[in-house]
Amino acid sequence: MRTRDTDKEKLVIEKAIEQIVQDGFQGFSMNKLAKACNISVATLYIYYQDKDDLIKKIGGEISSNFFSRTIKDFSPSMSFAEGLWKQWENRAAFAVEFPTEVACFEVIKHSPHGESILAVGQLSQFKIQMTEFFENAIRNNELVPLPMDVFWSVAYGPLYALLRFHREGKSLGGKPFTLTKEIMEEAFKITLKGLRP
Image (cartoon, rainbow, N blue to C red):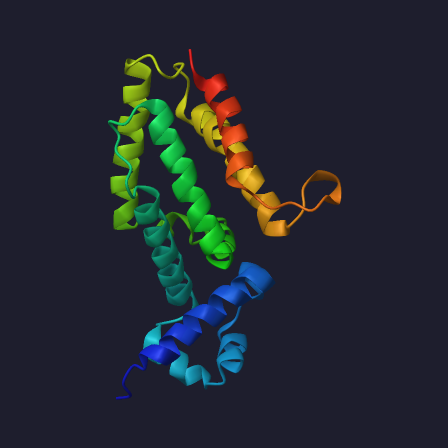
């Protein structure tokens, strides 16, 4: 039996992420991946059972990394403003550092594998902390009572719009755009104002 080569495995993951982003879920294939890695298709099956196994593992790894980085230095007991700002900082840092992985995660999340990649261990801890933070903010009268979906849209929608502009390098009308801390703080203040009682 052939042994696993960790450098080769890293290359496979890197090329798979690139191809999923470039070609989408439907355009991705093990044959294309093997060619991009300059290895045989049979070699891929040392690492993964099949295409679905590969996609699930990549999605799970990205989501675990994202969820653990999102709750770094965050506590549900923080004040609403402090905790939400920490979430913005953590989410922005991850998106800026790993733009290809974020784009890949979005593709996989909307594929038939979306539910399975969101079932990773880190997600349960993330959900517990986010729910506790949300409930504490309402109980402490720092957040208007509203459904979680509405909260998420208002609390994070502006950040993700800015991150999309940053990733594309342009804002509305095609003007050059780079996300700065000042721009993020300005959007955060307006967002916070809309969420407070």
